[in-house]
Image (tube, rainbow, N blue to C red; front, side, top):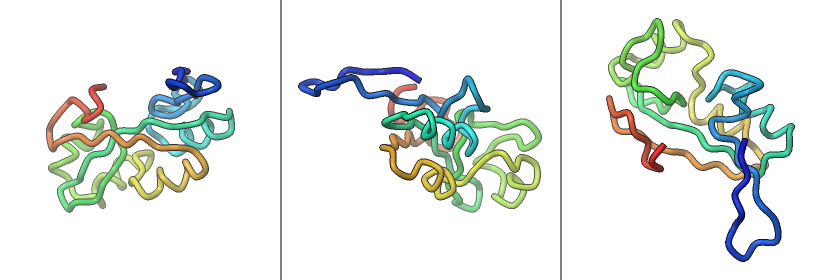
Length: 115
């Protein structure tokens, strides 16, 4: 997690980049839940579409045991990698904190937010 001073704000805000990734695997429900438990003000996550247009949360365009996420239907992603959440599941885990969802084009490696 990192803190960034908000211009004009009274105190730095703490953002969990891909969740509390030092305490749980990044971009997982466990990482997002732990970030919230630790008091993060916000969470940054990476969103991509599966072949059947389900939005999943994963940083890289490919995933072990899946290959290119944009080329795999969500059922295959879930069967091979149950740790990769949907965006809806991630947002539920982040309830109560601000979420910055970086979108990534199919096969792309850079998020819309530049990370």
